[in-house]
Image 1 (tube, rainbow, N blue to C red):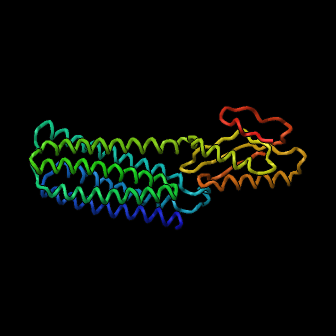
Image 2: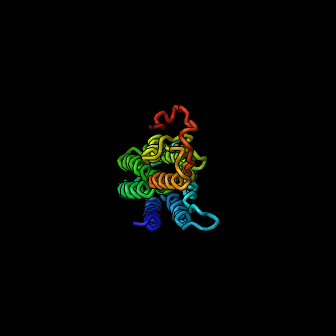
Image 3: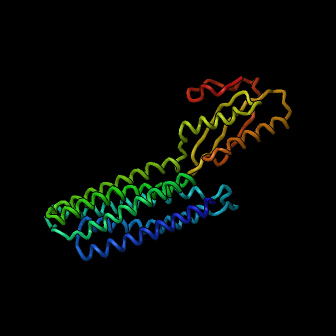
Length: 302
């Protein structure tokens, strides 16, 4: 499926699911007063809010290139993911405050088993969303969807913790309810930090993983007329990678022949799924510009 339609559909599905879970948990919390459930209701409500922003962000990022954005709008995605992280950090702080306040004040009591059932349903739904978002995020290289998947993964773990708390409160151990709320809060906060760490690299132009950099050099050296490669620079521009490098060819080639080699190398590098664009400079190999580099010891061939 086309990337634009796929990521937009995932965003809408996640928004609808989070809205339904938030309404369900809030309704049951109002009936039972479970602290573990209210922490999960807050979490789901925040999920619904950021899901709406993610849907809007995914709509923007999937717009086609235009005069002001010739490379498209995918670079907006890390900002969308960071918004997800900000929402998680705020929600985690609120839940932690609620649980700690209740625990210190001793204001907890036994509740019915209904919250445990609701939390069990929520855990199953969140696991399904986690698998769905992760598959789509990895397939379409979408930081926003991967961030959403991580949030749903954490929601599974926190829902299980809340389930233990609500179950304990139902069978006579009410102190487990606020303790579970604190566990949920820690999980939410850790996920927020994880998403921030993943996406800051996209925004500051960090280098891609070593295996991708090696694949870029291999793509250049695969051309039969290329004798070496040097000054290789690869960095993230949003979720995609831009590449610049020098290749060495025989010095007696005509300008047209060198141009054709350059074009073929550019196309080979652009064919790598993670690469957005490549810029190649052609050098005569007789100049000896290639130099030993710890990161690229095997760049030169022939």
